Length: 127
Image (tube, rainbow, N blue to C red; front, side, top):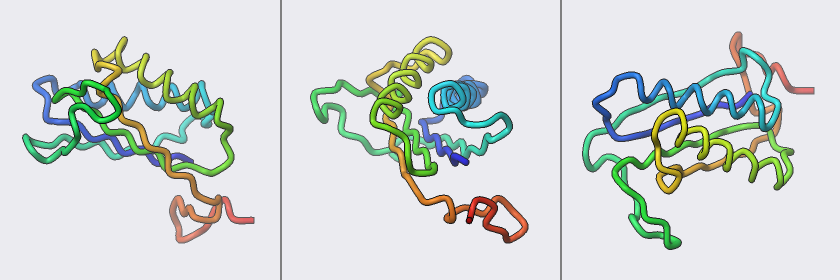
């Protein structure tokens, strides 16, 4: 059910972006019980000034290693689940992809179940 968009600056290691995607999917499965095979991601790298961020907003020292993660998912997760998700993604990316936690920006977009079509022109989750 989640659709994940991950945007980073172009990196010399061509496997890095896919590593980030693998970490995010693993954390979605463990932290908020996303089912196996429910893995839909848009992975994009951008040159130079195509990613805009404030290097000091809220007192967080960001770098050019900034990673933007937008997760669209069904509404209904608790605040505790969301906090655990954010923390686990930041820790996983630091450990598995050498991304500084300060450079992990996550946005959740919650939608109702009927706002999905996974193919065939059907609303698979609509009641």
